[in-house]
Length: 307
Image 1: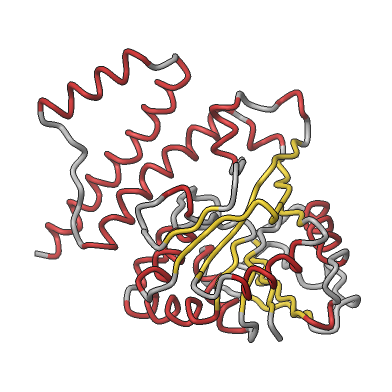
Image 2: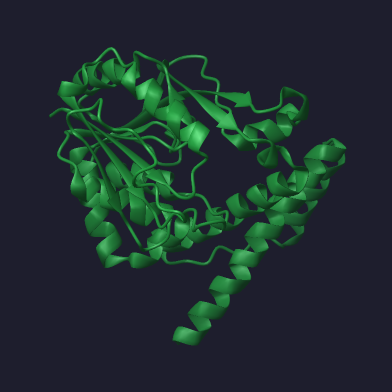
């Protein structure tokens, strides 16, 4: 079994999940050649009995009671056998050739441990679509070309969680990493708590084991966006969560709580950038900074308590 598709889900919209499964049913790779696993991460009511998996000969559903996207993903890694695991969110509609391209990329680029592709947005109500500066925080991703690198700091080549492909060696290494550092599970969504960074952590795990990461134009997913996620307050909470996660990830990676730069040069640079920003960019910057400062203060308290 070369490919395994894992769908972590928490209180999914039934109509969205049906579309996700229908897109998998239309894949050009026959279902006999890949496995499908849904990981229900404590949904209420449970997902079991709400979805039709009879069309797939290697499909099943398991329940992961420990809340958190990272816990659901790790359960998926543990329960599957494919050489490449594709992480599909419960609102990701895959193009019919997605799995076929994943298999080809796995063979063409054996030096890559993780990779993903393009993401376009489909809004429940297009009239509610936010401006582009905010839409980017709904995982809009346009790619001018294929990009890959083994440098963790090279952001353009870092895959995102939607449709992320993870080689088995990285799946195994990440499970061990989480077992040793369970705090890394804090890097991602916990129910309705908006935190991010688990997918980046998986990609960086591959880099630490000598494998690169990449993004490919031939891989395409349509991300379904409900009206509630277009709300400005929700988007700003999401941006704040990303700022928080950036600081948390740095602390988990090197054990250092990175202080937001507050010296004269740092403040001067911030002032210059602030002056050149649009009003919306200032709102976005403020939300991200709020998340970073919150994380810095919380982590500083934790490290002092441990001493």
